[in-house]
Length: 177
Ligand SMILES: CC(C)(COP(=O)(O)OP(=O)(O)OC[C@H]1O[C@@H](n2cnc3c(N)ncnc32)[C@H](O)[C@@H]1OP(=O)(O)O)[C@@H](O)C(=O)NCCC(=O)NCCS
Image (tube, rainbow, N blue to C red; front, side):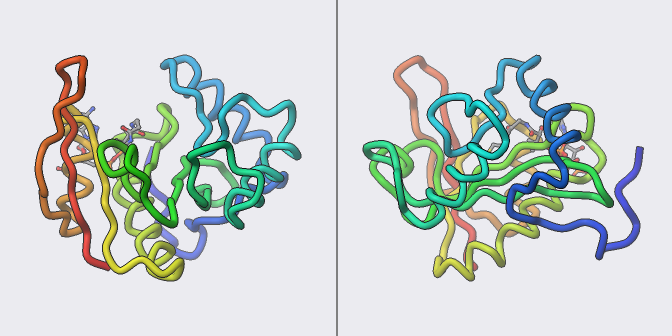
């Protein structure tokens, strides 16, 4: 498998019914690795319509669960296929300052290690700037070598490492937008 060679066919879009089939396939892959497959939703939505509605609401800061911040979800589409997703939080709360940061991303397992992770963050940074951020905090597990490489490729500067209660640690990077 290779990345699409045509830049215009690889893009970030708001979640859309048009790509429901490959999104559902991607969800199964995320679930198989014990990942919920959802950014920004506290529980599994009953349908893609409900999911899209929640994403739209949360992007506008409406119907947010308590303590949640407004956030916008985009899907990475290559040609006509769902590849992964990214969630851009418009602001930080105390939890996100420690773990989560402004931008979270995931590539579906079957599409990893060919460059999509690098691409999704590249495409997300201008979106974050458009939201009004000047600097983005991105956090990742200290054992997540792939994500650390991606963040560094986009000029991420390590702020520090946050120690979690369970002994694991999280690297906190800032990217100037
Ligand atoms: C982290 C993640 C997004 C990487 O996606 P990806 O599509 O595999 O990333 P890329 O193909 O762009 O690879 C980026 C770099 O990491 C390396 N890499 C990828 N997977 C790796 C792995 N499992 N172990 C070590 N290095 C790895 C690649 O070789 C590449 O290195 P290079 O820059 O030297 O060529 C993906 O593994 C994922 O979705 N993980 C679960 C969610 C997550 O951890 N999100 C990030 C936290 S916000």
